Image 1 (spheres, one colour):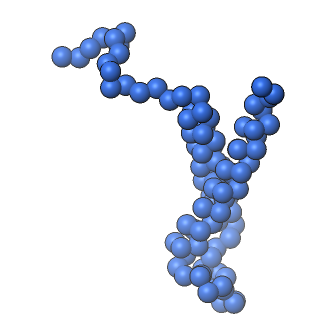
Image 2 (tube, rainbow, N blue to C red; image 1 turned 90 degrees about the horizontal axis):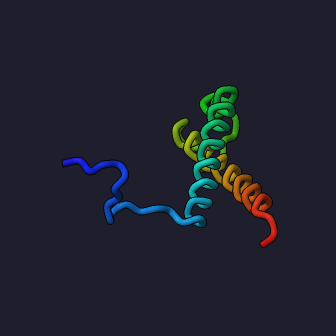
Length: 91
């Protein structure tokens, strides 16, 4: 039978303060990367650049989208980590 919400079972886990901060940084960086990828590739079509001199790693359009997304995720991660570090304050 279902347990009442007031009772907690022993298998529930709470995140610690550090784990919560790390998860917040990664999640906000992921959302920033998703938004940046959508905005960037709404105006830039990798298939249109194929006629020029693409780099050697330039494969399919999907490959370029994936590389672009992870690049933006890295930028968002650095930005979120820096923001978190600056907002921590002195201990």
